[in-house]
Image 1: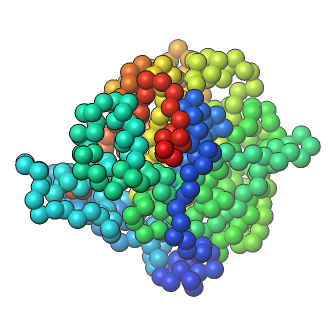
Image 2: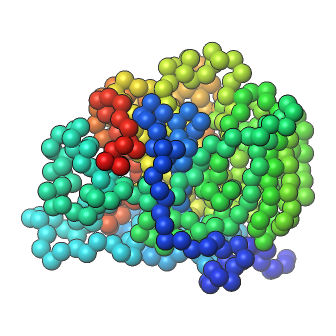
Image 3: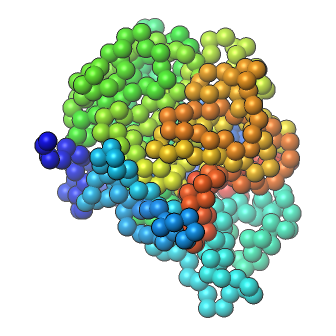
Length: 454
């Protein structure tokens, strides 16, 4: 067996890497595209009906705790799959080792004197929530009452009260990509790139992959029966290939599996995939070559096929008013759309709305998603409507490769936690991290962009 390493090199010095992006100290600016009204609001990922720029960044270093009874140890080394000098591609029997928690450099200093009964954990845990809410804490306290202000300690006048929430400080991917029209075909032009990506504004960027330099890649949306051409230009220094997960191809040579249905896409090459979009539902696209490294490092995205019959849409069948794409990954950190708490984007809805969450698992392990305060009505699995087999639950296990569509009836106001229920994926010695976000249900429609600019 050859021991030649064919993985994409990741030099310690980014300047020596031809794929390394130009460093920038700027953070994502607010825009109407990123913060739409609640009726079409920025969510956990982007869909044509809701958001444009809401998804990803890269992960810090992760490793499992020694045992469930032992608290995970923080780490600040780069993630195995994207470390500058160690590539994450490993033998199939050895999975990359995501870690439960990472204490970023620049973490707040714990004071010598803590509130009565508190430990360092309590102080750091509150700092995470403060970063998650940012200056949204002030208007949210106005909506939900003074008790929220007391919980976060707003009277301290802490710096985050004047700063953007964490999700607005990192680049979010998953924005819908409008196709160009070539005759009767919808054409999507995508690049396959190396990039630097932040899972958290306080953590250094990691080396990652991205479609159009985004993680997740752009959301591709078509209608059942559309002719689709997806054209990928490989800007990497390694080969790749793209699989549209869940599509019922007529021509198996479009399935995107190097050395089985095609030759790999070599560096500098452009390769088209052409097919008819079917069946309708929540589908995905991702690399299917050196996939442990490439998919784990960010080569993934959502592919939504809407039903040709308008009566089969979620709006018509269930009265859904907005939707969110929720792509989980765990090979380079426990992430929702490429970010870990507190940089995850909250779901924001007005009381009375029905919100659709499209769960997609692009990782290597199952994640049981738990919604506090609400049961979800699960109406589709792997894109297929469940019909009379639809069921309700507050914890939904999603296996690698699976997709579930769930509807939440937002009938009560509040800030409700929403997270993976494998606890080492969500809490560490410095508080919540990883696969955590919140469902924020307000009494009426709220313009998040206006609140952030106020």
